[in-house]
Length: 387
Ligand code: SAM
Ligand code: SF4
Ligand code: SF4
Image 1: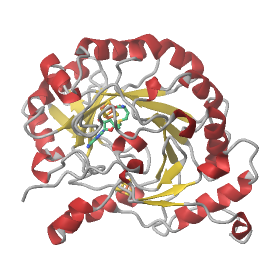
Image 2: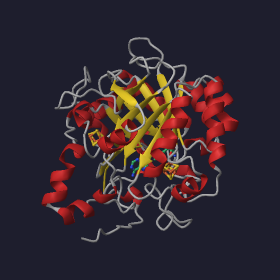
Image 3: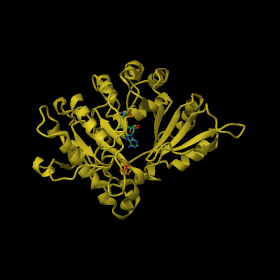
Image 4: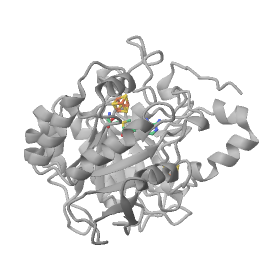
């Protein structure tokens, strides 16, 4: 069946943006304590998209036919200021957030990002620990920014890279950036202490399977963490088709033709990647060989422990990467606020307490049973809320 590519130039392709309730209604909401959704999932991980623009046009994310110069990108006066973001972060920390990931679009295109990181680094979690502040980037500007990001207080960095071969890389990203520039950025970040560096590689059938072994070999030799991501049906513009998904088990089998690998324990509840380590000739885990991870949203959903909430650049909250509904709280974040942080916190707790999202768990059934509705369901675009 041909898969329609829906191109709708409206706000983030998300048809439902729920405006905030009247402030006096919030007074009656219960105080947020020990906030969990009905599936017992807490809020731990806040992903902040700083910008909806990017200097790449990866076909699985921002295909150039849709994301043209005429695309309805956010006007700069609609984008949250750093003060507004910091205000929200403090509220989220009060609700249990321990980790903040800056993303985009391409977050390093956001002017003055170091200033935001500097302010974030001064915050601590509810239990008084330092916040884990990470950033996902395409790496194109990392070589020149790694030093200032580290000095500002960034903890770690994740770099997206889908191929080592320059022709493949430029074709996937639809750009003229040389792959060497990304590798230089990765090494600069490593040298500045922004590790352990994670490399995200989206594997798409017929596109870059031939890069699996070269990528694993390269990052294994350098003791870095390479994570394979299954091509996902995020948004409505990337023409996703299940036949283009390379299941993680197939990637693992490919790796096992070259190396012996062993599963590793998760670092924490809700970790998206299943980790594997390389085994050396003596049969032990090789501590210098880095590791691989598999993010298998399509073939092995991880919704059960999902503790992630996402904020778009213009102040809309999304409770799932595949959400069709966003909660717009931007009007509450205007300068000279007329609403207190306690009431915003009550509202966020309230929406989280209704959250039943398990999109990835139900994807295959929905696709089989209602294929037309499946492909027509409006969803937020990846470039608006990050990974
Ligand atoms: N521009 C930055 C970057 O590329 O790292 C941050 C934003 S990007 C949207 C975040 C992550 O989402 C990247 O690792 C990217 O590879 C991944 N991604 C984007 N579209 C995807 C898709 N359709 N399926 C799987 N991963 C995707
Ligand atoms: Fe840009 Fe990242 Fe999307 Fe690629 S994946 S187009 S680098 S936002
Ligand atoms: Fe979380 Fe939605 Fe992804 Fe499931 S599909 S893990 S609920 S973001």
